[in-house]
Image 1 (cartoon, rainbow, N blue to C red):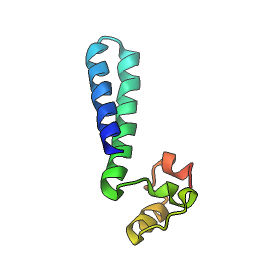
Image 2: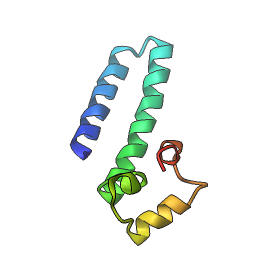
Image 3: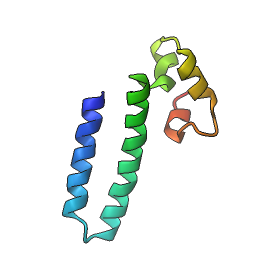
Image 4: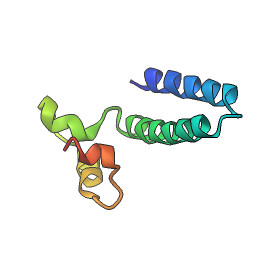
Length: 82
């Protein structure tokens, strides 16, 4: 849910501030921050993960279906569960 994603974002920011002098740690946390932002954007937009609808027996909305069919812009993590 969005609260968990926001909490994860806060934890990553705190970790990045703590380890700013460790390049590898900061690079990893930056990557995770982007990954988290992508997930948050999907939950904020749809209120759920549309790529899981089929597995959960839910119908796609027209907007979700269009998002899922946009293979060029669909995140890799969403493609892997379709």
